[in-house]
Length: 107
Length: 127
Image (tube, rainbow over all chains, first blue to last red):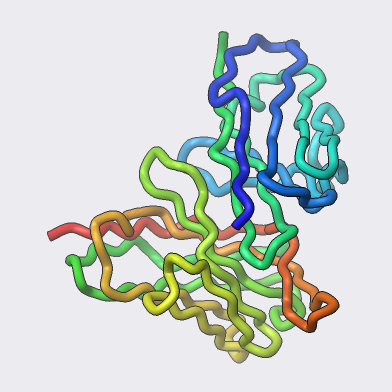
C-alpha cells in the first residue's frame, strides 16, 4: 500500500498569510493526487485534483503543484473561511489512501 | 445539483451489523462509482472501498475484507454499505462519495478522486 505523509501536522497562520502544506507519497504516484478541505462536523470538500487542477468553484487562491512523490498545496492569501484541516489523497493505486491531515488554525 | 443523502445515526452493540444508505440525485447514477470513507472521532480519513454503480464491481480495503459489503440499487439510485461483526474501533462517521473510475491496462478498475460527498452517518459501537 502507498503511505502518505503531510507536514506540518498543525500550522498557525494569520489572515493574509501565504500558506504551504507538503504531502509526500511512499512511492511515485505520478500526478494522481487530490487535496481536500474539511471543517469540523462537515464532509471533506474537493479542492484540487490531478495535483494541480482546481475544482470548479474553488477560489483561485488555492493552488497545487508537484509530481512523483512530493506535492504542495498553497493558499496565496489566507482568508477567515480557510481555517480548516487539509488532507491529501493518492489515487494511483487500487487502494486510495489519505494523508494524516494538516490543521490550519488562527495564530 | 449533485447530492448524496445518507441515512441517520446508528447505535450498535459489539458483534452486531450496520447498514448505511446513500441516496444519489442530480446525475446519472450508473455513470459513476461510490466510495465509502470513514473517520473515527478526532482522526483522519480512511478509505473503505468502492463499488461501480454500473456493474456492481467492488474493491474493498484489505483490513475490512470479509466484514464489509457494498451494494447498489439502481432503481432508487441508492448505495449501501454493510459492516458486520462491529467492534468499538468501528465507531466513526461514515461518508459516501461519488467517484469516477476507469479500467487500467490489466482490465482492473481504478478510481479517481471523490468529488461529491454525503453528509456523513455517525455509527457508534458500544455495549
